[in-house]
Length: 146
Image (tube, rainbow, N blue to C red; front, side, top):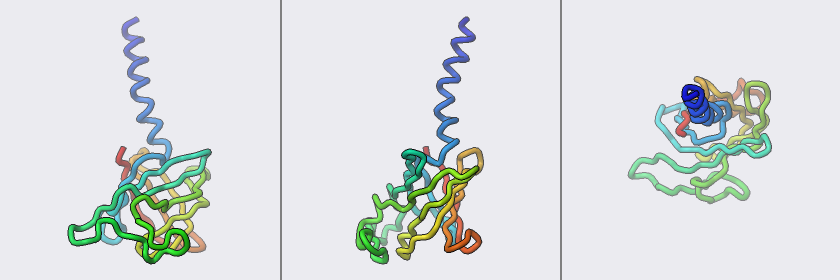
């Protein structure tokens, strides 16, 4: 009987970790595809099957502005702080990936179509931003932080 209680307790403590790795929801560190250095922490949330991502922290050099504004953005994002900004929106599950949404690059203010795919057992997230078709774009690998 004690053995069954142990198995049940173990299953309960393991299931939240397993559930976290089956969805992109969580905290991610994005790695710059050009420099290989970490750029930011992005919190992805899921609401009614739709993913949204918001910047929580930037990794900046000591001589750089620690609270930059999106001076190249347009519309409501123009000159708004990048920390706290929503950069991923409207991504929905489509087979084994999330697609149909958009991603903002705060460095150039441009918005691209986007798709995401979990990799490495949910520990990594392959993020693709593109214009028109996925072949015309660039990819980053984000690393789960929670």
